[in-house]
Length: 402
Image (cartoon, one colour):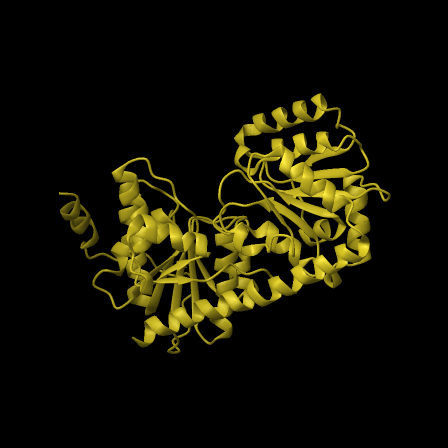
């Protein structure tokens, strides 16, 4: 019944979408990426980076999303943005989206449709039926499921002709839970913009500005935790670890957007006060210059209590030559060489986090520089934007040439 219902809605012959700015008629490969929104996030950054890579490689790039603060970056990178409510999980909206996407595929000669999230992936899957377009996906997270229905909903992400896993951790998750042939899975790690995240790219003026903005001391080591203000990021364990240091010869900055309607921040502030750390631990909701924030840090901490599909913070910190401490779950085990480019500790373990912090803060300058340099080289060789983009372009090319 569901299949017939979907088919009846998709096979209606009607013109559902038209571009305000038509494409050039030149015969170029057309790649359409579909993502819920274009705000802050790893999937969003990857879509923006790939837009530039597609156009630079001689193709045409279309990005479909519900909009967001970063839409302007699509045009800046040579692509075309189409606004559509692809973030919606409403079945009728998803079916409507599928018709609109099919119209784009047929009128614009789309070669590959690349879905980056579950709800839009269903619309893309239906849209590609009876067209020449290749359907592929990027699996960005270890999606949870508590029922067979939820697992079936998630499984759309493995129906692509190629399934990009953003880490070996995600590739293992796909194989373990969805029984996908290994030849259809392509592991492509996310990339970091090394031209932006590099110590030499941050001027003294930017660091001075951030020092004033955050009121940073000049005579104390800076501990930085960049993460959304949500429980899964592990802020409380860092606060407990800082309390165990038994001194206040540091300044800790927690920076990230507010979650849980602000309630969690109130809990954190109470915990900070309980440990008498109010004068040395500060929470900020936003930073518009993260490279400068990393550059100012002595140690960066990522104490997440749930596995990250990739996790940008450890990679960006190492790219900036900073010491990094993170939990040993998820893809972090791939992006940090324990004891060589950073330290991995068990999640929810304030004592282990304290031990690593205490060691890092007391590390001699010579060893700190050597460790930071090794981290920069490790990231440069494995997690650059260029490497991610080239590997993804190779996937597009393989599908188109099949």
